[in-house]
Image (cartoon, rainbow, N blue to C red; front, side, top):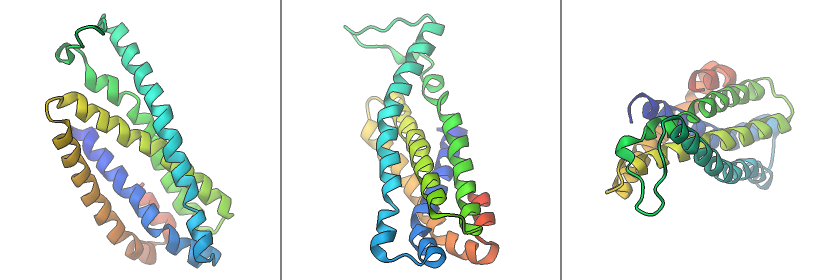
Length: 191
């Protein structure tokens, strides 16, 4: 996957630092009860669900755009020969803006928690993170399936294992980081 894959793994780990520590932050800052904290995860779910829908259209649009720009004609009868098609470009073009917005939302989340802003600000930022970062992961999974059409399950499993290991590492270190640096600087570092 190269540089793009490594960046996605890091972003995935940073996203998991938010999901792993959200309950702790909400309990400490806003003194919410368990049910209230659970409801605060709803924006993550809504953002992720909308992301899947929107990213499918965005990926289709970008693949068609790249195909037209490269004189590539889709062969619906026999299938496409991706050896001649710049699939990395078609899939990754839309990932970079997603990463930037997701990273800025993660940093904003940290500073919103640090300054104890209104709870709605944190929830909006978690929605934005889920919306953009889920599309990023989905795009990279699509690329893996395109690059390894004979073993897509193996490629996806290896990708998921690596992402989850990074997420476990991020989840393990975020609370000590917040205690040492404060939420703002901790999430600036991981964002």
